[in-house]
Amino acid sequence: MNMNSVDIAFRDYAFVRSSLLERREIALLDVREEDPHAQAHPLFAANFPLSRLELDAYAKLPRRDVPVVTFDAGAGDPDAMVAAVRLRALGYTDVSVFRDGLRGWIAAGGEVFRDVNVPSKSFGELVESMRHTPSLCAEDVQALIDAKADIVIVDARRFDEYQTMSIPTAVSCPGAELVLRVPDLAPRPETRVIVNCAGRTRSIIGTQSLINAGLPNPVSALRNGTIGWTLAGQALDKGQQRQAGAPAESTVALASRRARDVADRAGVGRATLADALAWHAQEGRTTYLFDARSPQEFDAGHLPGFRSTPGGQLVQETEMVAPVRGARILLVDTDGVRANMTASWLAQMAWDVHVLEGVTSADFRQRGAWRAPLPPLPSRRTITVDALDAALRAPAGVLVIDLSRHAQYVQGHIPGAWYALRSHLRQALGGMPRAPRVVITCPDGLLSSFAAPDVSVAIGREVEVLEGGMQAWRAAGHALEQGPTHLASPPLDRYKRPYEGTDSAREAMQGYLDWEFGLVEQLGRDGTHHFRVI
Image 1: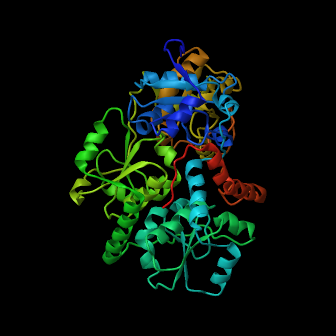
Image 2: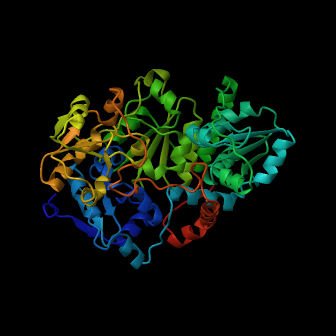
Image 3: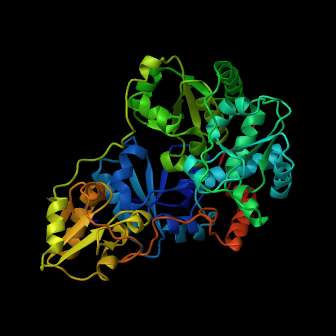
């Protein structure tokens, strides 16, 4: 790519900070892979890996004239400039590069945060510090379980996280569902409700949601979640299937009134379908359209143009789907509970957030999973799975490069295929064997299609893209190899959270908690957040 072909401006710390303080729209995009991003970044730098840029751009940056500032490590790292040029080629008109990247940010006195989803996690700590959200330690909760006390434990994480490990007796009830479903799980006002997550944020927000909504039960967070449980030496369950059931109609009506009251107190706006259409087409203003229900409900019927973003995860991971700080968010559901409770938190996190009203079941007419809008695929040479299988059996060599995420590659890849990060392509190619033919693949053939021109330039000749990617390879029943067998790139695309899995080191878990405890102080030093707690 000729980086001199487009005139790209540079921005500095003062520009970004003033944009945040004045609440102007800005997308500060950290284009490094997730692991280096998690080691150090500005508070509102959204991780937007260069390797996946074409897959994410149109979904996460819906307005082509949004102010974008790309960000990398500095010290000669070219990734921010490469990303800026690619974004310009995709039609974005206001794209600049942060001068000297992370190094420049630190030199200017900018506060640096680590880990992922930091805006949400720091906000959760602020909520607890200001509202004194009640909590119980792991030992006390275990004692209640042992005594068969009148308690209900609800796990506010995604169901797949709950299945990996959970507190004994806990029921899965993702965060935005709590106000809707807990009343039927604990119909007696004397029943104590305990909310847990992996660490702290989702249990704090979930507990405070129930308190804000006026649930009559005593409610507490499990202090430090499954991390605290493990550090206390207590056993976690694995593979559980318990889920909160559908609420009664009377419960929905009461929960809707409660949620509306909380949202009104938080300053949530109201909108109609006509507003949604006008906002979607508006120039100079970014609007995200999100459906706060479960993915299953979304698949069964949703409004055109809306993206499935379950409310609890949206509050936890806002910058992952809405990297434009200062944008407008419009939420919808079918019950008036999940959208309003989610919106109440986003409003406190200084988002301009509205809930869609006046829609009927007939409006939820679109079926199927949400699909990201994509740029046109570049011209490329393709190969079918059967043709590749035959070529791999032939004497002439074929080099297969797999651009999937590292976790996907480890789970199963074409025998002999090399794992590579697109963003580290030239370094990766130096560690691979030479072959007369080169085939690139990925989960579905999309990323490899966008990457094909890069690979061709890097090796100096045309490459082939596997039609349908690994999905087609698996569907055809061809052989798979598992494990980290041929790694040409380090697994930087995923930062391993200290609370993930069942084998995390105690030191890492305690370090994570210590980091969370310090976030409120960091927020104060940074000073750009505009958070407020009702």
